[in-house]
Amino acid sequence: MHPLISVVAYDKISMDEDMASRSLILNFYKISYKKNLSGKIRYGQNYYDFDEGGMFFVSPNQLLVSDEEDKDYSGYTLLIHPDFIRNYPLGKNIKKYGFFSYSANEGLHLSEKEREIIVSIFENIERELSNTIDDFSQDVMISHIEVLYNTPQKLDSCLNV
Image 1: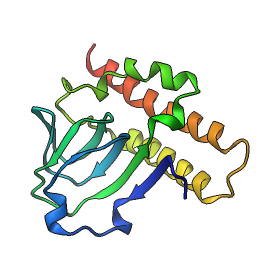
Image 2: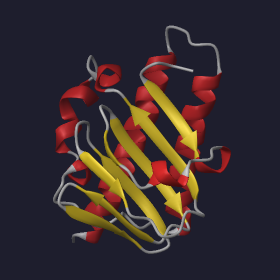
Image 3: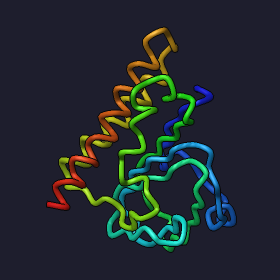
């Protein structure tokens, strides 16, 4: 619907098994919430470890390898090209989000209430993308993305206290 941003609901897609196990280098940010996923996904030299799902973050031009045993999961992925956020403060501040770092090696686990918040943000972005794009669409989506980024950062800081 938009060349620089997309929301993918896992329950609405199917993937060839051979494609799921390939290495990828993406040229955009990938923010995923995966429910019912158990397994590991390699990001750089480390693995994200999932236990009953969680959030997963990938920066542009980083190696991503899926070693998932369980392909039966649901959730969303948000794909954002850096050009989409470039002219916004988020474009300059995105490096402060530590969960995009190779040093992060665990999926961010969420409570049920936190899951509801994260899923609603994905759904809001998806709704905005499905509407006619106007002069305010990008601003609205950037606002949702900032909330999506700030929610795990808040959760992550609570975990590290």
